[in-house]
Length: 328
Image (cartoon, rainbow, N blue to C red; front, side, top):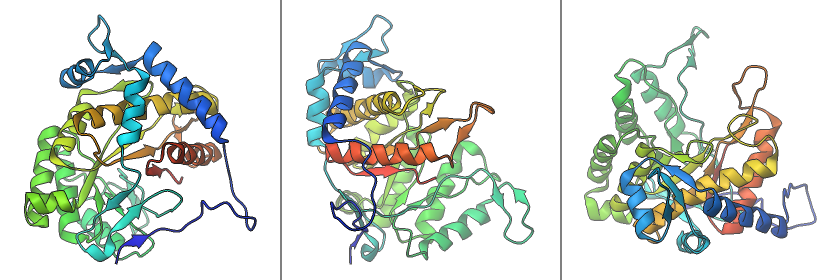
């Protein structure tokens, strides 16, 4: 049985809803995004990504990292990105379809600290905690897709993502999102996923895990993120592109301006992925919120984060792309 989420996005007369922007307003945000990507561009720190962009008709600045992307490449990439994404579980009964106007839920990840369930004291998570949390999340029917919940602090942090992957494959039957920090670690995770799936062909048919590539606001793509994205497209590993701007800090203080820079970061990465492999499944993600001007920290539970997430959901629907937003 494939799981399909709740259907809250219907136009209806009963109940309440939140529609952040009209289609005309979303169109203005889109045009402003195209303007930014061609007239300002993005910084791309990966030489192979710059080469892919340049070979596809993008302009590269004298600094060799500023890439300006023409509108037709962006719009071709949007059209080629699949409108739905099936998050395949190890158990096919737990497959989840991410699609327009339907909602599912995922746990937050990944926490560097936890409240001990027995002592109630805050402490660093261990590998045992990761295993227990993974098994717990696997049994929660409300969680449609698994995301690594904790950072195991009793292991070298350079390979902590490999333990998260190992724990996921041993303890969870849902589709898993695994944060990965290097191409080498990505290849190790791929070998795990391939072995669990029953071989490379089976993995391509039903990829059992995905990963995320995060732009750095404002308008920067790191070498690691670009190289991981390129390798994922080559290995048929689905991707979430997740921008995490802070309004008033790394982006404009207002909602519309932040949406434009956020959108430019996402669409430039989507374009890179589609240039590597047309039709590769990619999810439009956001953890964008506001900066607490008193502490200069991210204000995760603020009302503005909900407003950003609602606006991004509408923007992704405008592009007919699956989306993943922060819930706060």
